Image 1 (cartoon, rainbow, N blue to C red):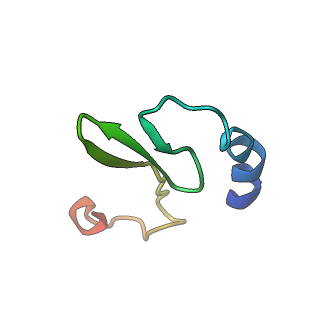
Image 2 (cartoon, rainbow, N blue to C red):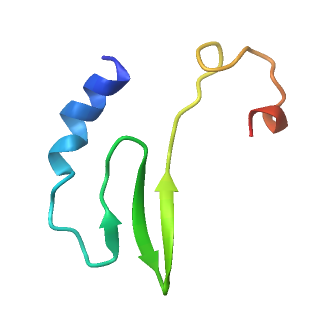
Length: 64
């Protein structure tokens, strides 16, 4: 399954849910926006796989 297919099948159906008032932008492609106190926080998780997204043996500091 390709990334967009995975997103469309498992995440988009939950995109328009009635979230808590602290959720300003729900789950989508790569991030959500939530309130933390009086600030907004963008939360994102993205997988990086050696040999697919970067060459094997790359120093972790260089990936950041």
